Length: 105
Image (tube, rainbow, N blue to C red):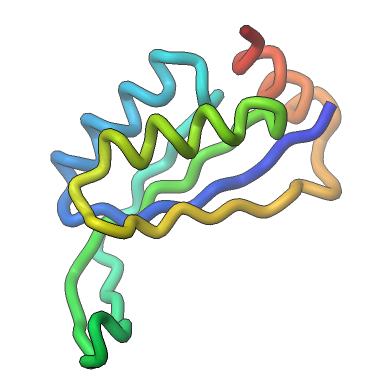
């Protein structure tokens, strides 16, 4: 039982809701949280840029990560979307079990 938390920024709340809903509906994530109003400052094509974005936080089974990443990238409007993940080393065992069971194929 290995769970991950993954992060992805989106251009707006409507796009985030649509994509997060599809990812959860497909069972690629047990849960997706959407946090509004993230201001990002980043380097893109040699210039420093900034944009208001929305942050999506996903909880998923590590065994489904590659499938999750491929689907999220296919749905995402950015050329190079932020898709990152971290292992959850500690957490309520019942919650982590729910995450992995919710993503079972």
